[in-house]
Amino acid sequence: MANPLFDKLFAPHIGSAAPFLFLPNGKRISYGDFLTKAAQFANVIRAAGLEAGDRLAVQIEKSPEALAVYAACAITGVIFLPLNTAYAPAEVSYFLSDSGARLFLCDPEKYDALTPTAQTSGASIMTLGSIGDGSFADAAKTMPAQFKVAQRSEDDLAAFLYTSGTTGRSKGAMLSQANLLSNANTLTQLWQFSERDTLLHALPIFHTHGLFVATNVTLLAGGAMMFLPKFDVDQVISDMTRCTAMMGVPTFYTRLLEHPEFDADLTQHIRLFISGSAPMLSETHTLFEARTGHKVLERYGMTETNMNTSNPYEGERRAGSVGFPLPGVELRITDPDNGLPVPQGEIGVIEVRGANVFKGYWNMPEKTAAELRPDGFFITGDLAQMDRDGYVTIVGRGKDLIISGGFNIYPKEIEMILDDQTGVLESAVISVPHIDMGEAALAILVRKGDGPDVENIKSLMQRDVARFKHPRDYIIVDELPRNTMGKVQKNTMRDTYADWFASSVRTKPLILK
Ligand code: MLC
Ligand code: AMP
Image (cartoon, rainbow, N blue to C red; front, side, top):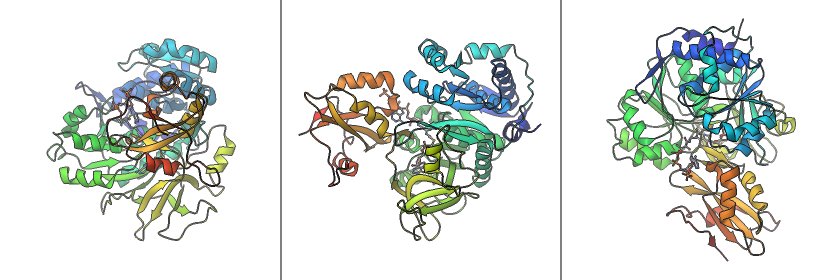
């Protein structure tokens, strides 16, 4: 019986006493124990009636158990669908219904709030808490530690990750076993991960970065992870000397640089710092090297494609560049108007093709066709140029997207909510530089009648929308800047409000004439 994802990532570690996870409380979990738990979880999943190809959605805090659910999905051939823990019930409801999830795991504290959501979408609901508590964990305790691994092929789907779109409706990116394995293989080799590595893991495990890049590379290499529940700069600093590598979003690096204890001594055991998911300022690269002597290796990826490019492990790592296309990934830069490759050195849209590129959006053939060309190239929407040496530099985004601390905010989704509010004629949500998160969302509201009640809008956001997507401030204006064609000029607004978050965040909306 074959199941490539399980066979390559998990099977080699069955029964192994080697450490897989180090926890902040000093506990360590061996590969063998982790896989025993995963097998018990797999038995619970099967007992709940799920078959290979069914979807299991999870919205649970990061923990070894949460990661074992991913392994249990690989064992059963069930499609793993992790959700950001910040999502509000209204958001979760969409993901459950759209994916047709059969089973939904949530934190015990959220059970009451999320039960109606699960019931409406037809999913069964069980709980799994961050300390290994909850009905799912309890059911696993009496399950056998053996499991018959489901037969799967590389073309079978392993995970759905939802990603928002410029139209405001989230799309389920379907990732196959081959998508995950090809990228894990490439990155493990390129970044020279081995069983001697301990990766400092402070990322969430509901996105490509923390789930696939970090975890799959570690599993394939047979290394260990210092598995922290979240990025807490003091915790990261206190664990750093026990690690050999770290992966993070740029905010991790800027927060480390702000810490008075962060210096070269602390980083002397680290052989590799990797950054991605959002652009890292050249200034951050420079400061980091000056403070620690390490050059951060920046790479570039996407939910739909896993990783696409990386600066070299050996060779020149260039600040501001995302490096070269990965081995096995074809990358071309095209003219957004006609899809033809632009001359070398000119700016265009990045398109990528390779075993890393996803299978399309779940139940959305038209959106898939709009972004995945018939020849297999995926249109990323990122604007870039490639220099003569082959280094790719991202210069902007052709898509209306805000990346805040590595989380994506699609303005359209928020604008649709704001436009519906009393006293709002129309709105624009724009990206503004933010010292900690890189970018932050700023809402510009056009007054209708007496104008909006911003406090009301904030309460509505609090109820229905994940906190990270909330505009960090609201500005009320009489009209939005438009060009002669009547198109709203977001670039103009980005320039006008570029310094908005340079000082402290305002508590009252400012009214501009
Ligand atoms: C938290 N908040 C955010 C936020 N994270 N707001 C905007 N953007 C974010 N990213 C909210 C909190 O709810 C809180 O609300 C307030 O902002 C400040 O919180 P904090 O305590 O300072 O934030 P913290 O919990 O420390 O989180 C910040 C962070 C985290 C940067 C550590 O966001 C993070 O781990 N980001 C990583 C995202 C990631 O993994 N991306 C990979 C995507 S995959 P309040 O109410 O207190 O004000 C991908 C492909 C690829 O992109 O290439 O990798
Ligand atoms: P996501 O949809 O969450 O996977 O986010 C993917 C997007 O993150 C990409 O399309 C890029 O816009 C951005 N991104 C990822 N890595 C980098 C990077 N190193 N530099 C600039 N942008 C990046």
